[in-house]
Length: 349
Image (cartoon, rainbow, N blue to C red):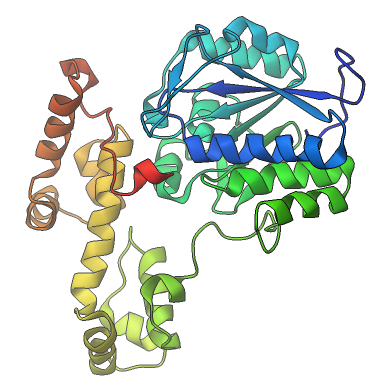
């Protein structure tokens, strides 16, 4: 989609794209990408794109919202397409299928453009297809991805295109990805017309951040408080002392505490701890990291202190968290610690 076409199969003006669906894929990311292509055909009056749905065995695949989607082809059909896009969602970090990984590596050797939306970067990384490439992933999975693949360059930006690999965050970022590809191949005017049909006020830049600005997320406008929270979010592995946080924004510790009580109805210490324990839950449920490694990654120097804080906040110890997840999903003992609990709001991706 972002490279000159090397294929001549089908009409010369039609670009053929395969969407490979991983179980529990994000429906919104898949449909956002596909609908951009459909509108490109409709508004141009030409068959600029054709798309085909592929699953491992050619059977329907269940999305994260519970809907089943029919597949057009099984895995071996991927060889017929110049572009393959992986669509995944919940539990992508658990996906381990050596047959699929081998096929993807074969496609890469053949020069096929390979992309991923939402959490698909986890699948590409496990298949060994992101070594030496820059990528992105849904913000909720960014921390766990970094911990599991420390040698892969991953960003928090909306879209990353690096040679014959392209990735984007979840949700409607897939539409932005397709709109940039359409603009590159067929002009900005067509991409803008599609954006207008989507009722989008603009096509977001690939370098745009994924998340709503911190000021909007917090619902506050005090610049120094926003800056302190940003410092907390960026320093969870090595937490900063309250005096240091206050010093960095030109406040006294007492002034800082007053701001937190007034605007966030809590103390700086409790807010910081909440951030770190929320990150800890993501790492526990999205990675196979040992509990002590999760503790260290979230700024706890003692496993016992981490366990107590975690239980007080989440209602169960870290080990109980993983055991409950195994029980809920019927995991075998050897799979312990390798399953991910669906986080609140994840189903909406």
